[in-house]
Image (tube, rainbow, N blue to C red; front, side, top):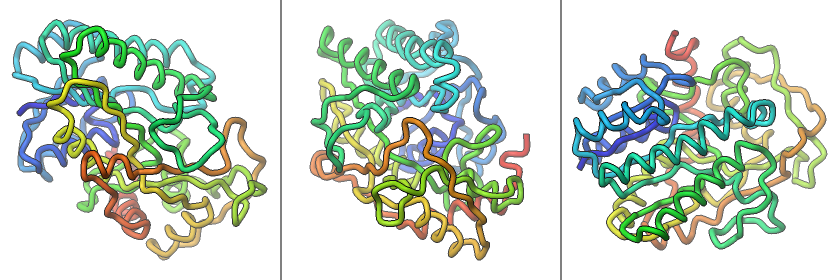
Length: 338
């Protein structure tokens, strides 16, 4: 079975490509490289022993999509391609809606045109908005998203849900991620953010690598045990395996299948810093700053429904997430070097 991965050279896409090949799937990657590097491709070949076909192009480009669907017998699409920086989405909403919403619509149209009616969509826990309860369960209604990035994910979910309602042959799997971190255990692939990172762990890694002087911790007065924000962190390889479990369980069944991919527990910013220090042997200087607008005190997944329906649960510990992150950063101080 051949799977097309849009955004397949990005952080989560590249790790999912490894899992797919190791699970016996054939893979084709489409990416416009706006937030990733072609240097990941030879590394994927090194890890998997396979030369994965790669197309450089945008999901809004119908021609490249038609070329892929005509040159390969694609059975399913895992759709990661999208812009993902919350702050940038607030500053440039048109860019986010154009890429994440319109791009998903063009992809779905071209899939239908090619008779490919199975999609796994990379969504986010941000679609829950700011609900009154934790942990988050799949039956929570999507809330008022706090930024255009979250709104774009929610809109794409709605579009795919409506398409499936109109044509019941579709299998739509919506995966709401919590906070993916870590890297492949080989140390060959990992997360490479452009510029100053938005997310905690890449930020810590840049401080560890000497690129930034200190870590800014936004908010030390939250109603949490140590006052810092708490999140549900998940190893990127656990996340990758979640896609395969969901596809195996539900990819052949028509309908809309919605799952949280999280660990079910939350760690604070200070716990993450201490765990990274333990893994790396380094000291990470940090400064408590005022809260950021739109940040929540604490949220985490209830992963029990996902386990019940697909058999998947997280396996890798926080210590392993940190060790794998540190291995990637220490061996690749400049990421993929381009």
